[in-house]
Image 1 (cartoon, helix red, strand yellow):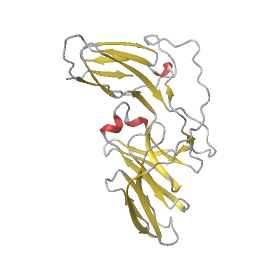
Image 2: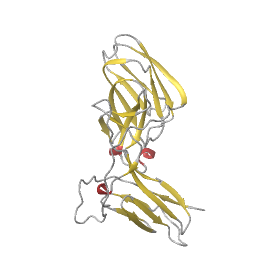
Image 3: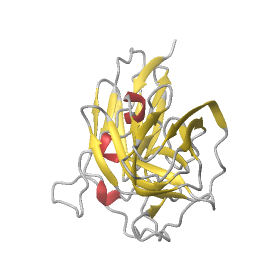
Image 4: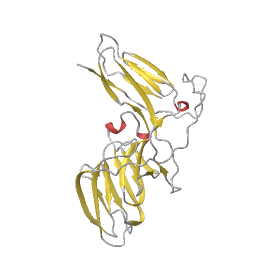
Length: 256
């Protein structure tokens, strides 16, 4: 039977420059290229449609599992409007969990509407709460990132504001891959730290979501291993080696 190795990534420090005690040496040619928004397919529906009618008084609608909640304020609508939520595949780069289709897509709200995603442990695996963002897919298939207006780590909720509906998804801006693995004694696991870099968007108040790329080494202070086995690393990649002939009991790799 294979033993479970949990790869835990906690992005605790974004360092703008190297410190003298930083064990990670920067590559001489590290010069990230400008990122451009990635185009992905539209998500396929995976659940039932939840419908409600909301008017000028405002109201809210949620998915059956309360993964997403939409809150429409007073006078955001001038008349009664059918509002619907449906789970879809989350094709956003770095996406975690299901996405959601909020309709009608053509509606324009007079006041900002709040879209909240509730996250769980699975969303934090290989990442951290501070790295969770919400994006929507525009009519060209590009994912756009509004500013996060609230991150509540107690109720575990991320919230943005918008004046329109689209397909929405939660994604991790920085993460380690793979998140976890099953290894036999003596086997090893190769890991990489990825980021979703910032990319220009037609909307000056938003950013586009490009494809993931390796996190620049200047943002990593150190790698650490808790548990038995051996860890070797260089820049943004690492290798965990399970011990020969020994049981692995929840070894965890942390990247700072």
